[in-house]
Image 1: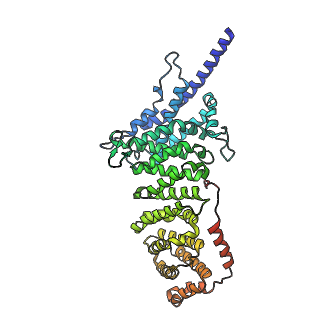
Image 2: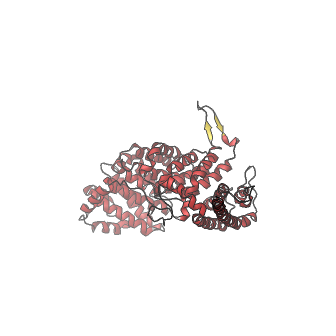
Length: 488
């Protein structure tokens, strides 16, 4: 019996030594951040009731962790809580580099880099520690896999990702509550609106949203799909918030989710998610690019096996409605043109029904002041043609006229050669797929001296490749993949 008690004491001492070593390492890492942080001059904006710097200092004050009063040794729970606080601090510091908000813009880049480095070092130390070994079952319960892999498709979780994943069940519900506290809630009858920000400052929600975004983007395919039940409720809460900063982090998180999960893993929430996308398309300029990318990726991920899904058309109609009201807004049109390609492919031939709204915008944007818009429009025109061959439409002649005019206007543009090359590519495709209709539309321009080289290129083009273009058309219009959107 005495030997058993001695062995038990030795095991406890070994555990405490291991915990103490990890705790000491954590203190050392926190000080590498806390010391330069304390030297940064920072005064919270006037009227702001929270100080992110004070929040960071509190999270990084690991020495103040409550020790066990009996033996002055830290317990597993206390150490894990200290690790959680340290990680939240690193999350805020790292994510601050993507923010221009006054609450976070004061954080220097070198401190964010130091936080990333410190967290990676802690992750590796934790994975190799006795505490990490004892908590390994958390990963098995969450993901159904073991840790220790290289993370390159072997189904295992590498050491640097493991700590983030272990912390997510603890952290995400807290961050969700922090975001929700300053949301705007409608009463049951919808007549009264009470701002919860009267009870909690919006700054707290902004801080929580950036921390949430960091956690989500640390995990990728194939493990993120197993965490949807944790991630999606928090992301939806962020989308429902009135602050553009909070909304934006929810959108970025959903975008990352769409790129790293299977449609089946989103199926439980699909209608709620897509409805939230449609509701948020009416966003301000600050978040428009995020909502477009998010909405396009989510609808094509969730509905790609159903090209006739009404969500495709609903999403497109919502976006076109806002673009029609602000056709001269460069940021909005560029973002839409840049991200809309997967949505066009998802809709396919049904795009013909939307020509009366799409082509008037295209015709305006073909002559925009900036080359970026013009080049993007030409790419999207080419996509629409390949998907539909602009069949049964009165827009053929107008498109030829606009392209001929753009070819001449390009003489004064910086991207002259790129624009003219794209125009020629589209006209050749029109010539091959529309034949006599194209000839009739082009004849009026054939004697224009400013289009001589273009006319020669078109007259020298044969229609021998029509069969190849027909095959390409059918492939673009009909092929639908059921595979997940994996990161490139």
